[in-house]
Length: 346
Ligand code: CP3
Image (cartoon, rainbow, N blue to C red):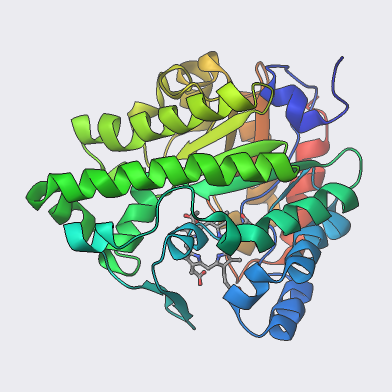
């Protein structure tokens, strides 16, 4: 039976008259209603672990814009916290974690399947959403990819070049690979539980994949994503997987097959025309409007949406940004993007 959900149809390989649409970070600080609920929760992590309020902020952009998908409101760093790392957010700066720098630090973490008590509120958010979302709206669950999560666990914070993670990989490969393995296994458990709770699609965010070079890209971006996808497909063969190795550049070619993913999400470092020719041939693509258009708007925004839509029109495509929307974006530009994306090309 054909699904009535357009995102699931695109993920199954169908070319649609206009692309279904959602937006990374669609529940976020550019929305006044998000800022109000976040203030009510107190801080970002309290919001993530309050299932009712996390479900509420997930629903806000659906009510306002009628996106075709909702993405669970949580964060990729909740998993290392569930494994035993300390995690806090510094306002205006970003996340901080206790660091893992050697074998003893790795050994002190919990086993991969010991995460579920800590993450129970997240599964509850998914259950609430699967009840509350409109019939046609697809619910997307997610996790960080092992490499990206490892860069934060090793450095204890975000880094411009992921230097500390690259250094541990060079100096203590055994510990580094142990971290990647633990994250791969725990991510399988985490995403599988999200699916059991009602997630209909899962997305793996590898925000820092672009800094892996040569064999490292294969070993630490492609292989872990492939292992996670294969394990999920074994348990949940009908649940599509979206892989987002941000910054992959020319290495986007062949990734659907290498990972076994139903969809590859593109950042704005590649052109839609190139990606249609070289990546969309492998399956559904998602992307890839520059987030800055949500700040600047105007005719440039309309032209860019139409260009991307036209480039991907002959294959399965989900419209999205190339990265998350930023807090300085204008909510009216989001509406303009959606209206333009949903108009049929002449
Ligand atoms: O897309 C969505 O709306 C779903 C929810 C989601 C969040 N973070 C909410 C969030 C998702 C999928 C993420 C993923 C995430 N988190 C990534 C990978 C994707 C990417 O953006 O590259 C990374 C690297 C993180 C880690 C993280 N979380 C950082 C570096 C920050 C701080 C940056 C900032 O803007 O302050 C966060 C915080 C965060 N995660 C916010 C949101 C809405 C902002 C928190 C706030 O309300 O203050």
